[in-house]
Length: 153
Image (cartoon, rainbow, N blue to C red; front, top):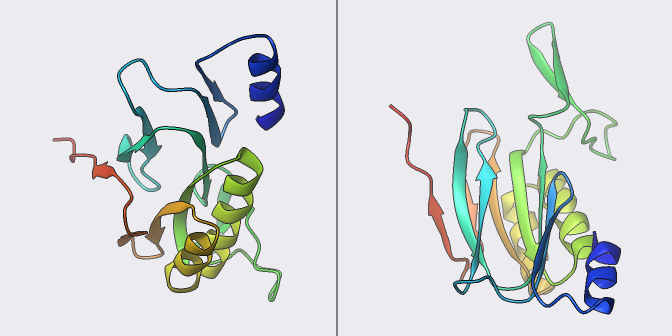
């Protein structure tokens, strides 16, 4: 995604949004200020939140797209390197950073570490994060501009 944005910029594109699956990259300002990026709810249909981003990249790591159940337990693709089993501290972790690769690395690390250890790590890199822990409780770094999506009736 970072390379795609680089190619666009090299060809004179001043404003772009590139969607690469679990990542969104931004080039230049949105037509009306900040880009509004929806974050999928990890357990329900619709959005968990909407973040406002002026530049950089947004990446989400979650347990809700690639998973299966076996004997009542959810197994997904984000493995805890200490146990070899699926990480269990989060449902999703979204990170906003200056580059796509940094956002991707931090969203995965934050997902594996959980909000208590993950959010301070994200802050060290001057990035922002929105995390749903294993119970669905929402955590965010200081200064993140977001609005929780309203429940559907």
